[in-house]
Length: 277
Length: 270
Image (cartoon, rainbow over all chains, first blue to last red; front, side, top):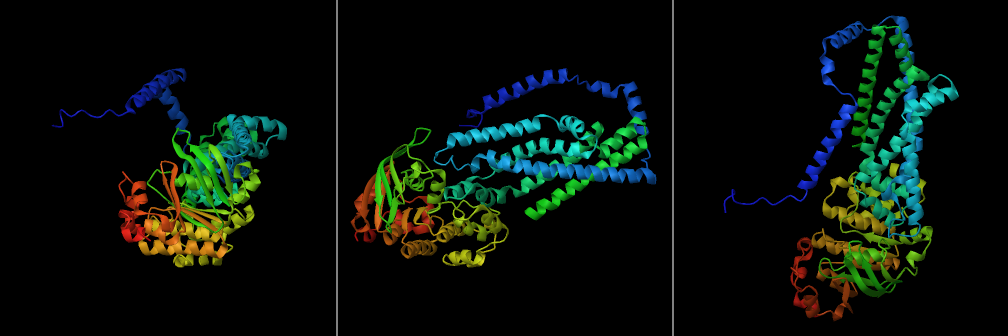
């Protein structure tokens, strides 16, 4: 038989994949419409002129000593807010992730006694994580600014809650996505969940967990900038002032600091991955 | 000390892995389970190790009814059962020393387990267990530096370090060369004699089963076909047990090709 006459075997997945593709396009198209996404507006002559004027004001970045000392202080405040918020988020996330991770469940072996309550506890912890991250941190920040007054404390707490929810969810998913047999074998030999986590799951997942955590810290730096706009201090508050005074040079100097902070986070992540490899 | 009474296990997909299996194993006994692939050997071991709950039937492990115990007691019972897995479930990045010390996690409090992960608290104990399998020099290597056969021996060293009252071994030497396979079984048997532990192992290598075990259980299609002292197993029984199968499973060829091939007469007629 020649290759031409040979019938290709039908891929049983082909139909499902085609359906998924058509469905995704059908959902995406109205979404773009509702979002009023119109790329042509970007290249319209008047909007190009407005944007150009705005960007031209950015040069040169402000370098006077007074502003730089303000900038340094605000940077430190932002870093402190992000780091403290992440630390609190970590403390919230780890126990919840430990509860949510199904491969660390002892009652699922068999299945044994207490499987129902354990599943309910997992669902409850998952719900807590969802509630934590359902509101954007800036909404929590607005709330806490009313409670604590203006300043970084509100930002720290807002970050702790939203990022606690995100970290907990993703930690559990990372722990689930690797090879879970080592942990299962340990649980089957009577080990507790924390020990099974340490000897069964962490060796394989540590690298990914660390790089995700550093990436989230980087996001926390950006988020604390946004929260600055609603009065939580730091670079965001400084930028808010500069932009309100239409000071492009100061604004661009702040943007340069953002870039440096992201580069820093990237460097830390690379070093951590190397250490854990 | 281990008793299965009419145990049936039906998997969620409807496959009947064990079909009315009854088995009684006395303390200190050494029992080999043989049979073609898919006969239910692994399921039998997993039921005995309390990692699978039977659909029907009665189970006694180390004089306890595992599925009637409170969670804490069940954990304590599991800590006294050691399982050698066919493919040692070891994370590639774990160090050998931790992989062996993990044998006692069932008895250690969580703080001790975590502390030992950072700095091994009993590296001498781990080294002693490894030395019995000629792996003492790999103590501080990472598991991903080791070959499949070495990993399988790490799994055995973990159980030796655990010092359980019941050792269950699922194809414990399938990845080992004949000399290492013999040595590994000798150490498992020595551990049992030393500690008064019971050993139940599934094996494809019949010569090893006949050399190291008192009692041979033949399984096929989820049932026990015969259960005899090793002297009473005949060649016909073995041929019937493996009838219609390609006699040597591929992973036996390095282990003990001669015996698994077709049972050699001089082995059978003891």
